[in-house]
Image 1 (cartoon, rainbow, N blue to C red):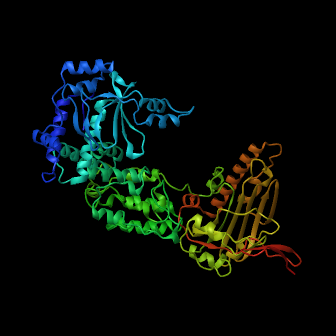
Image 2 (image 1 turned 120 degrees about the vertical axis):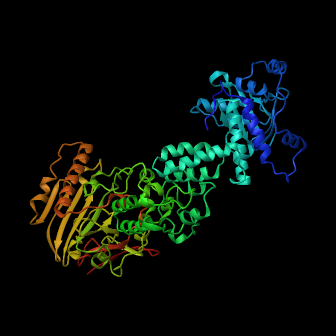
Image 3 (image 1 turned 60 degrees about the horizontal axis):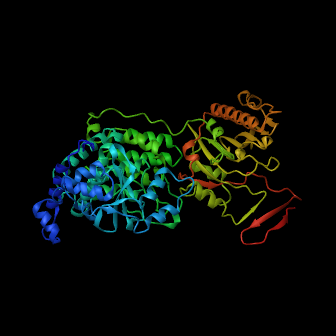
Length: 639
């Protein structure tokens, strides 16, 4: 609600409204103390106005002129009862006094100051020894005005410290700002105690009208304006405002699910936020987005009624094979047909907890979702417009693989197999390790790492990655590994041959150069058809090995050239540019694409399986070492 500034603010109407609303909210069956009962009967929480001589006497006793808003308050009421929920009595002219840090809080705050402490922190630490104390009776709550923390128009900052909250004092720019917030606190506590329907007055009716307008604004896609409108009603404790604002903040990544507050109807909570069952089997196998989800929760499948619910199921099937782009467009296209269950419902925020779709709702994508008109007006075609076009989660093609920054998932290298004319579910039959001819259940990248490192036995010839699978464009499937070991060109065996029976298969392996070792770059391409390798090339530092009849468009000389004399940084940049050109050519030659979104996020759930080894078995006479879990290592000879 719009309110006057300090210069034009009228204390009498404000305090009268507060008193009347407090008196009406008192339960007649709940006995009050004598002074409170008298205030209820009089419908006035204050006292008689302080006279000019009383104010002058206080200023003389303190040795300085009072700040304007406190002085104006005293001219209306010489003190105040029930200031919020935890201050029973505020001082008037007779009881305001210097605090002088009687409780020793100042020493605690001064002890943590350092050379990097801000001006505000230093001011707050010194406040305790010089502040004017206004709390007379309270629940371990201190109300202090600092004569050296002066804001506009000569106002003193007010600090409210609730000793039991273990939080720093709340700072207000003036006494008026403090009293306004205590009025909000009174409203918030009363609404919480008695319920939204029972605590009704002119103020709540005006606030609820704002909430209703904000709800329609949010459904029309004007979520930012709606959020600003909801802040004041939510501060006054209007449950519906808190529920709606909580949904906005949750989707924008600003709060956790459990911080949403009251106000959601049982129907909305059942659909969007049912209790999740903790299950240690799924620790880590659950999308985590800006702290909005909890790793220990078991998988959750979001459902919704009507056409939007059908689109959710379609999107879930798309994203399980890596097509986050199509899944997101499917959700946004169906969103205008989404309908709120009731006036406490703003958006399908339960999607955040969906085991597959939750990872899609980054804050940026959530803003896209919130900007789409939805609800009854959108369904009737009377909304404010179609909303923004989705920016896209995936750039398409393969070139993006060369653009990974240091420290990201793929910055240390990657490898993948592309198979034509095969569904992703058929890849284990072509590439799976012994006994691993089916897809594992959906798992995250973290789970894949645990599975990879849970092997009972490994050796220098063992290279059986746990790969993620999905669709790689029209008619192609992929098996992708984001943590390859060092490329061993003497032992490497391309899995393209095994994967290509009855079709074509493409293998790519890339290890980018480190800035301190530009000669370590590796880029390999091999293409096989019907169980026979057709052509291949391997770039290893400055050396290029090739075999077969390489198509002109894939000639490695087009991509890689000499970098002699270049600085390590320049060599790395040249290597990235060469890699990008090679990937662009491969994508164009085979019309393939890999999904960046799911392959660069370890929290995305994908089907995975363990492949056969990418290295040849040992030859007769070659020695090798086998590591066994729980057993001593030892050399073994192969004859």
